[in-house]
Image (cartoon, rainbow, N blue to C red):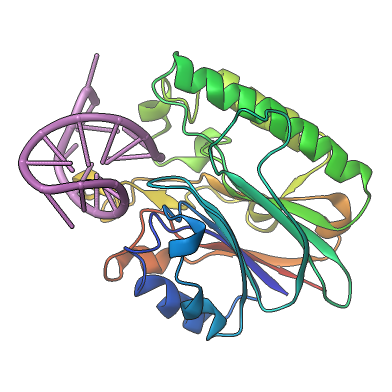
Length: 259
DNA sequence: ATGCCTCCCCGAGGGAGA
């Protein structure tokens, strides 16, 4: 089973590039971030015509997450637990019903800049809520994953120019500590498990020719529970589509699970 | 680089992103 995460930076702006990638890559499940659309305006037909079930958790203007799945989806839940006053659409989860059930969680973790400030406080608070959900997910002892745009550069080797990010919310020690506090509960970073080498990125800024200079960062991650990690066959980044027509600033990261 | 693009809101220029 091929499962991808992809921050598309607006469904309207990606109405060509996203289907083109789907037709080429043929993922079974896709976790989308930054759909920047309300549920009613999401172009479900594009995906249903290709055999995907579609579940969205959108909001007007920005944020918004979705799940596409060729297999049935059950027990869909929207919103990260822990703060009923949080109205930002950054979390959706569901069970993919195949030969064996797989719980998939799609997330768009807050950027947090500028740090310090209220946006950074929100990021750290959101990560603490994420830690609680992660802990419960591990306790289930089922194959499960949390995948999406984490807005975290885990290690210096995950940035082409780590020195440029030292004061950034994506790389501050406090941000990385919060990320590792979650991973170290018992998750496997699927990409690092398959590819130990530095120099692999999932985001390149639109500005200053970042793609042409390969000035990237790796911030889109798939974290697997032990029961899912046991099924991991491969993990790759489809970097080449960053150079295609009207790309997102992120590219897809995907895993192949033996399920 | 406290921002060189791009996306969204709308129907001008500002917020947000990373």
